[in-house]
Length: 204
Length: 118
Ligand SMILES: Nc1nc2c(ncn2[C@@H]2O[C@H](COP(=O)(O)OP(=O)(O)OP(=O)(O)O)[C@@H](O)[C@H]2O)c(=O)[nH]1
Ligand SMILES: [Mg+2]
Image (cartoon, rainbow over all chains, first blue to last red; front, side, top):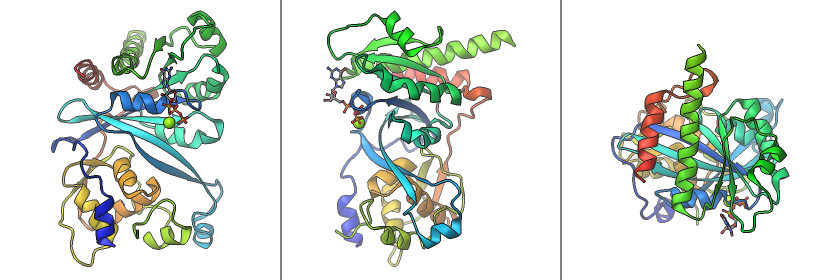
């Protein structure tokens, strides 16, 4: 068994610095096929990894779980990558499915997250309504990035209206197949966070 | 292949964690960094030994789960046992998020500098 395990360990993945001690999170949410994994891949130091989180059904007691271990839980897979920002700070990017039934995963991912990027395909904007509601409810700062799937039937103003975005929420265009563009999306989010903080300090 | 994996039947996962569904400590974030403090040894549970081999450098909880091909919740149970045994140490995220979850200016500035350097 030991040998079986060592065989499946990653042969080589850029290791973190020995001094790394601060993990940060940013979540990328969006509907099926909107480019979440592509964006994680574009900017990460590593190839995207995949894992899963489980939620036990509410109202389930530990004793019940012992009786029926893991059978009453819902599982959702997500992928992630990472960027070493300096010798201490590592930014983890999580790509999470936007569908309503995965709300529990985001609630978990959103906790302690710097902020979120909502990726949208403007031919399927309704796919992101629920995610945006959830982010607002959770008070997680976010920006919206429209991924470029060719042909632009809508103006950004139309997209903003269709998503019913608050005026201060940034809405930008991107092509997440490009590393530079994905990087700009991340920078736009962090600048938005800075603006939010400055605005808050000025109102105190 | 005998490595426990997410495709395993529930009984296998149940055995792996001694039937528990929760870690003894609830201190692991997905991005908590784990560092091994012991050498893998004979007689250790094979997953524990595997975790020690992968944490010679800091590694996040979520990476450990992905590499072991186990659900995050199961990885956390294994890790909390190892923490109790003194085999690993942990480095928690430092960005204490304030009211309405905004991080501090210093952290944001660091992130921006790092991103612009990419
Ligand atoms: N034209 C175009 N295609 C893209 C872009 N981003 C991603 N794609 C393609 O769209 C497809 C889906 O991208 P993924 O990154 O797998 O999307 P996802 O959101 O991770 O999808 P799921 O995890 O299945 O929900 C892939 O074939 C990508 O190559 C883009 O900016 N422009
Ligand atoms: Mg994907």
